Image 1 (tube, one colour):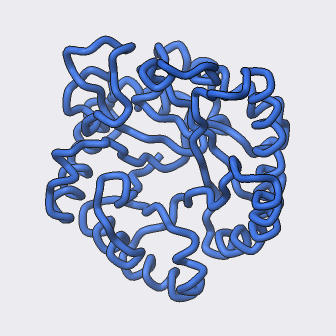
Image 2 (tube, helix red, strand yellow):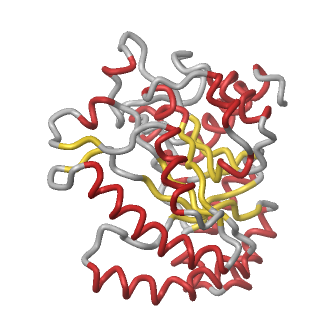
Length: 281
């Protein structure tokens, strides 16, 4: 596993050149990529930027709205191979998206069938280009409260969906906050392999709240509060020999208010502290 910077995830607005520069400056080995920007720059220029900064491209956000009307979704699928070809040329093998844990119109079974169909069609195209597809489950009960129907919100539930789709290139976008709020325990790692985890998000939860009271948009840097045992979480990833990127997503107003370089510095340092406590640095 290795440290990768997603500038947007910590509230820093930066293009690829600035993101790569900041990542290299503050000890990240990788950087999350806006694949649409890469298409505009061209692969050679993007690769030059990354090489100059001494970082590698770790992942890109899925550029398909799978909730769209069928005609719009079908058009996005027709455009996806060109996007995947760009990612493949740059050496990016991971993408991911998040899955709402609720619906106000579709009962669980209908929603499940919808996700199997839409996500399966995406996954089949990604597979042709050697790209793994991560799905993020959302753990907080507060997200599901007030909605008519619940949907998948646990690790095991999301893995089942991936396996039923059956393309063989799907796994988790495994977020520590969502794992914690879904009732995650260390024994969960006994049911995982490296192939089950496409991308990892690190963060911490707010003190003074139960798991069921945690709010999705109010988190902290990894290790900042100690509510989530991030070093143990990292040890669990090491146990399965996780080979992918570690990205911090703290949803922290404190971090967002910092100048860009300060925000990246404290993010990197928070990761290093947790990695040291886990015995991995």
